[in-house]
Image (cartoon, rainbow, N blue to C red; front, side, top):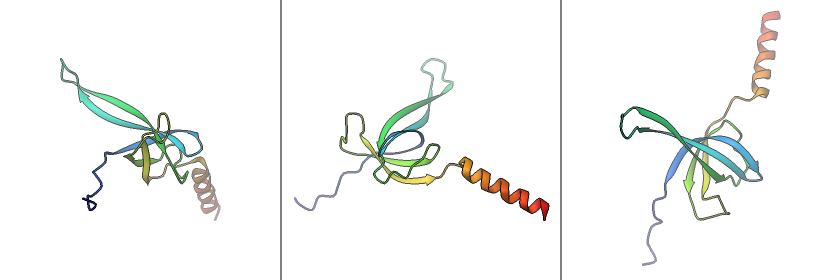
Length: 105
């Protein structure tokens, strides 16, 4: 059976919390779970080490990741896409300059 399709892999969406090295990031994936006895919803998180082949994700970005074969000792996930870019200080400074210029004009 050489025409078998590739099996479906798990995907998660989370925020980049660290750029630990070249082509490596840490992604925090939040989820909610009810308390076993009291049933109150508790916020939990999972931190996964992710392979970022193109080195495009920055801290604060929202990314979609996919399960993959082991790439290193800890990395078992890879970046599919960057869904949302984080607002950085550079962008905020540019917007601040634009606002100041428009007030003076």
